[in-house]
Image (cartoon, rainbow, N blue to C red; front, side, top):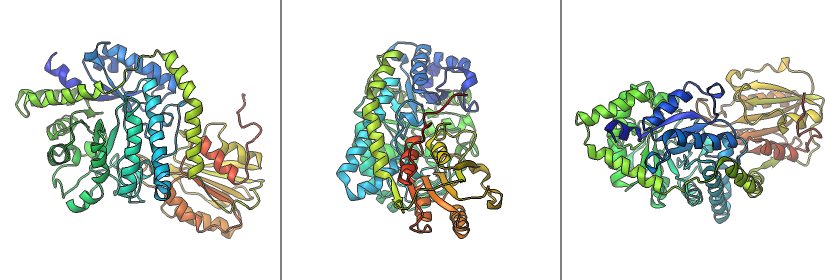
Length: 528
């Protein structure tokens, strides 16, 4: 095997879960099939997938492995950001509540919360393995102790080091017990930031003592539990390295993570296309610095050819010894050896997935019921005619709101006509709304690329205006516990309100049921 082909095994490129180029949702980052097949034939060793159905994913994983070659030497690492179950990204699999939903339960009943986190991990690992993924990029081990965090937020397992540690470790046990790799992220801790590293380079100015006491704690536990991989954070931490972000820092990856914390598994960068990196470093130098710092795998370089060439030149020019490449390749080989091979064909995999649907669906429903919060729900249900005012991040791409979503159909059956507010242009003139009572449904949570956690005072002001006009008929918050905390104290007891950390249709059905809005007779959808 040539040096370039060996190095190619240390790269993970992005692809759509859909099978054709025209179906790609994010062509800026997702390679087309011709280029993807080229790189797999050249030895690229991993693919991160997003988009499509569970059936699409099963077909795609098997197709990619076929393109790479069927020998053990060509075995791929196939991964996805399925932090909330495989159904979060691939329709037809199980979509679970965000991890932070379990934190309140852990503070009152730790054994039950940890058992549910373990079941959460088993569900995710089982479905991933059946469909062809062997690497789940979870758990998020960041402690979300900053409510204004725009990117970690409900993806975290807790707001304290203790809760995050206990729940992420339980999840990891369940996940890796199903024969897939887990990934503790984002080292050394992205929870206490108010900036999104997809858009800029956050600064974390805490002392080394504070980092030891809080940020490092869940990662130490994950390492002790044998986690297969750790993902780096694109953060500037002056206490650890005043010059370079953690992803590119030898002090963070080699000295701290490898030597001090004793981690012997795979270190993978967060995506190098993120603007925390691309605003400051070119594609070639970013990949070279990450590898030099101690990363084993290069995730989503901005330019695969330039990044691979930079690593090849670094070897030939003596920037690092060839032994360093051999160490990363051996860690990759050992990681793959831990993964249970996906031996089922597509049809058999989908059949096995269907057999899990009942038990996994029951887990999803139990988590929704445990995390639902209500207030004033003994009052009369909202009644129209009126306005069903729904806020979403993007009205053009909103997976929680299919045509038959309960958030649309149940209020409609009660006389409320839907009006959507797009989070990208949030300004709203109440005077321009149709007359009548307003049922307010807010789909708000921290998410990559949004730049805001959503609980910034705007909705509190709107709620107060609706109350002053005596128009607020009910409120449901889907996602952010921080927005719920901000709003619930404003609402009088005679108005029914509810909160669910989930945004999926199942969360909508449960929350609206608590307001007295039962299933619509045509909730199963219709044809045109």
